[in-house]
Length: 340
Length: 270
Image (cartoon, each protein chain N blue to C red):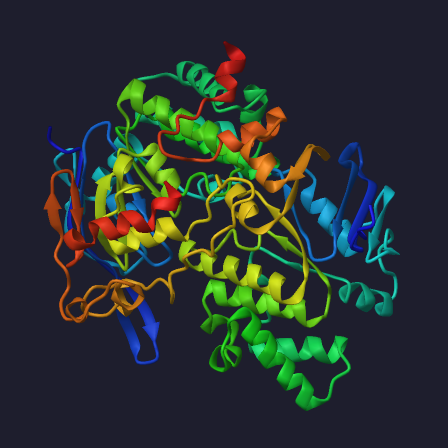
């Protein structure tokens, strides 16, 4: 099947004002991935990994002065050469985007109803009453009580959790083919998070909605995405089926991320292990060394790792950028064993 | 039994707080012995932060009592002297370390200031204590002499922890203190918190929505919902086999492999 979204060799440089005038910092350094219709792909990483910017690049929501190279194709259209009108069409019907902070998405001066109904009505095909009926149903589905009243209220009258559920309902209402979600549940309570995930899951299975889900939470990505791409310093270091990522990581960084998380299920009476923290801190692409970006923090690094950048190697359903991937496989599986 | 119960660090009895028509905290009782760690688990609106604010003396309980180290501290401090006294009894570390540090003050200057206020030490003793606190939280001389903006999120949170310890307070409330940190950094800070407890015998009250973090850091746990405690016990027992439906629901909401969350609303409508 032809991919719905195809990202190839994406490079993004952002302008920064330094002591010597304007310069650019590389944030994304050669990212490639495809999303098939109906497929959910997770982008996971820590601060500075470039996961959010990768997502924003797809609909060209980038800061002023950003320099983008590579290829971005949605439904076989070249996103990077689209004019303003084509971009608006892309953002209003093909691709919906939701972010962590719902207050950034809504106009505080207008009612929630205006926000929810405006897009789908404008996009045409349905009249206001039809859209309203569907909206009320969706809002009930996402756990909003008294939806008629909520639509008459203003954003400041609602809690962040409620507003986020409304933003998600509005995104679904425009019937996009692809949903871009950037940490959409990070600020929500866990029980609200599971409601929201259940709704996104239904949309995927009932309507074939494709999704790119950005999160720092490897467990969350693995639980809801078909495939997970682990990002570090502006690159994808591992791309694997979510079902095997947790037990059989192929990149030392993925294994280290899994092993660093405390485990919920430990038998009473068992000594709690010291967590395997990763030394140092996450790096951005522009501050990463020229070889493997993870090399300074990696427990398995060899001299060769700092010499050149490891290429992405495909095998079966997975892809990994590590010189030692094949010889480390068994060792990494052992590292995450207590977390299985 | 001849065995002596260790002295209590915190005893809360029948604590209640009403805001207008809302009972934010209703009949909350718990106690923590010195050197132990209690987790308070619950979602937004459960009242856990209101309990913390009453313990800190930032909010007056509508009824009920609070004892810190055996002394009644139900009412908020009124004078500067009383406030200082309370600060030496209990401290709080917040989620966002950036918001709680002065951006023009180096870590060592922040610690020195707290020591000058709360400890009767010579200049040389103070410098020595700053180094000790730095060692305890894993900040070297270079980091201690840095401004907050030059530190990572985890390092800033270590400064906030060291500052709480500098007051000499035997009890520290950790309010979602590792929630905003990157996974690799969070592990560093969690290990540091465990080491500090072993080394100093400090008492923790951990407020968190992250059950795995709670399991890692505390011995006992209370689960709060709508202002009241609905379940309590050892962390191992409550988190592994919760009895209350709400605790069960919190557990089921933790993402894991093959997780297929069910929607509460659709169940209700069916």
